Structure formats: C-alpha cells, structure tokens
Image 1 (cartoon, helix red, strand yellow):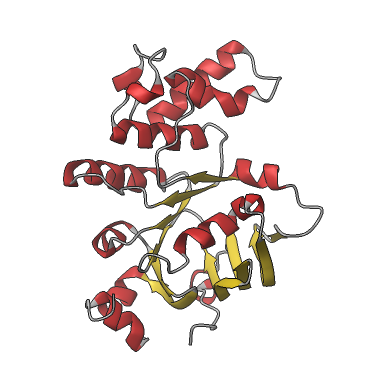
Image 2 (tube, rainbow, N blue to C red; image 1 turned 90 degrees about the vertical axis):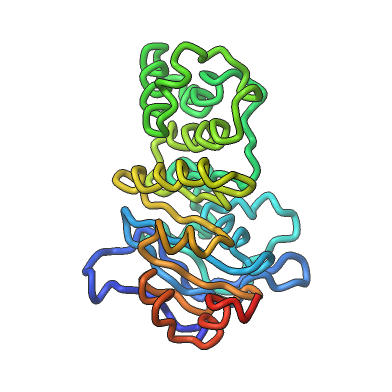
Length: 265
C-alpha cells in the first residue's frame, strides 16, 4: 500500500536521520505529494525513482524546506523529522536546517564568482572564520569531490569556465563546505555522458562514508548501481520503498514491477 510506513529500524536498530511521516504537499490547489512515509538511515544512499512529474524533486525540496520559497506551497498533512526534530515546527530555523541538509539542484548553478569564492561563500558568512580557516575549508571541500588537484592552481578561475562535470562537483563542494550531514542531489547526472555519469556515481559512493545522500533520478540503472535503498514514486505517491536489491529484483507492488520492467512509463 502506498500509505504504508516504510522503515527498517527493527532490522537495523538505527535511528533514522530523516523521517517522513504522512507528508502531503500542495502547490496551490494541486496536490503534489500524497501521504508520503519513509525513513532514511545515516550513511546510506537513497534513490527516489519515478517518471518526470512524479514528485521526486518536490519531495527533496520538502526535506530541506526549499519549498518555503514557493509562494503557494502548503503542507496539508504530516511532517518531516531531521534527527527527531520536526522541521516544520514554527520555531525551527530553516536556515540552520539547510546548513545540515545540503541541496544540489539538477541544473548546475555556480555563483558568478571564481572557484574559491563559490566554495568559501557559505562559510564566510560566519564572521568567526579566519582567512587560513577558509583556505582549509576550500581545500577540504574540493578534495572531497576530487577537484583540488584539478583546480588548485586555478582557484581564481570563473566557475562559468568549468566543464559541466566540474561545475556539478563544485556545486557539491559548495554544499559540503557548510559541513552538512545530509546531501540532497536532484538528478545529479542529468545531461551527462556515460563517462562523466560514472565519475559522479563514483563520487557519490565515496561521499556516503561521511554523508547521508538522497538522490532523485529517472535513471533506474543508476539507482540500482549506487543506492542502498530506493523508493518508487508516481503521481505524488510513494508506491514502494525497500532495499534497492529487493525493490528491483522482487518488487512487492505490481505497479513498481510494471515501471521497472518498462511496461509503465
């Protein structure tokens, strides 16, 4: 059943870092998400799959409250917890949430600044950082996405002069610079060729040692390769959520099986 609560706490005994509970979202009069329920355990990769318009991006945006800037977005039921804290409580600070739950957009959106300034921008808002500390944050963040060796002598280069693959990694480094616990990646390999897709997938596998990662992707092969758990969404409903191997090899819901087999687009 789509409204079932999907979690594996009884098996893993781990407390979820993200917990989505009966969550429904409207854009104006249009229902975008219907009673979504699932838990995410730390240091795993979770893939949200489904056709275009299924609600994957809306769900990612809800987890870090990016939908707050959507003027007609309205939570109609349920809530989302980050480390047992209700992120939609009035007193919860969304800016603090976004420091801990980083969001990387589908379309590369580097700032109109150089490489160094892109990564240092967020941390520099904390006036307590010295220049030396910012230098170290930039180096660590670029190292984490395998960009330091490529760009250490080009930190003054405009981010717009980087390749698409480098821009994607720079945007991830910019999120990492704030030292989040969770990374949300919306279609991280959209428009990339096979070689660059492989590089980003390899990067995601490296990053999960230090971060919990949730990706939205329409690429089922990618989800099968890199995720630990996967959820299939359609028309704003979470049809099934399970270990990735179980969801792809032995789906419980016939609708999931139809989508994975290509009979439902």
